[in-house]
Length: 287
Ligand SMILES: C[S@@+](CC[C@H](N)C(=O)[O-])C[C@H]1O[C@@H](n2cnc3c(N)ncnc32)[C@H](O)[C@@H]1O
Image 1 (cartoon, rainbow, N blue to C red):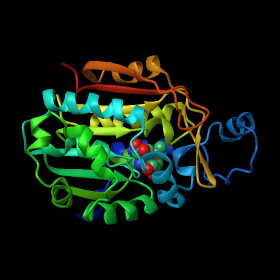
Image 2 (image 1 turned 120 degrees about the horizontal axis):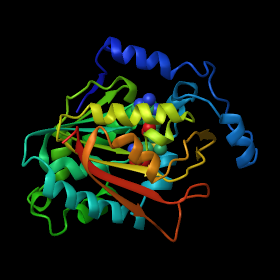
Image 3 (image 1 turned 60 degrees about the vertical axis):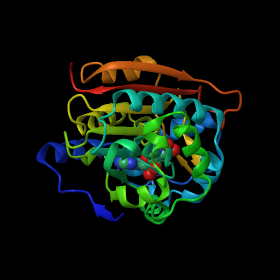
């Protein structure tokens, strides 16, 4: 339960960083209330490093996304708990959740199988929130745990998940683009690669970097907003790359195996400007 700076970069990682920062160097301005079309044009071509991530309003995001269990998150939790119960190492794994934000359920889904879980987050605000939250997570997450654990022995065996999180989770401040490679045994990445940049090549690089951080055959779950046009967090508008299933498949097919795609629909979307969620499960590396 501590915060670490990420490890020094390899030369390969440094070259990735350099590429990821070529598009723009000045911070993205806060939105001015322009229309969605204006905003897409304004953000076009802006890289991850140009957005004010440290000002990400953690409490606003938490309140709008995870104050209660949404039906789409419910569907995703059922799918990932089933997948990890079938495919995860029995115990003792090192887990990774990248771009955790204020969402604890991907980490909770890995909890029964891990001795240690790294929460790798870039935004200083979210890092502070996570450090405080994992010390004793809020009661609102009990409803999420109930769904993950119901009828699944690896989860039901855990008498006190709150205490186990305190001893298992570690917050690391760092970027997805600097993840060490082939370090973790199981991993999750939720609404990150397509929601941290307006550059398609950075979406690809982030997704591949996440998969590369996992050992060969490590099971993973990754979720994506479908055809997202960007999103507001409080007063700041953050970018997205509008991806569909084909884009994700192209990005993953040569570096993973046992891929399964799930289209997640809801009658109560979170906001305008996206077309549902896509959940992908699989194993890292070629077969
Ligand atoms: C749309 S939010 C998703 C948060 C959370 N995983 C969820 O499921 O709601 C994107 C997250 O990616 C983080 N992020 C932005 N740039 C990043 C980077 N270069 N490396 C890692 N995380 C990054 C943001 O701070 C934010 O927490």
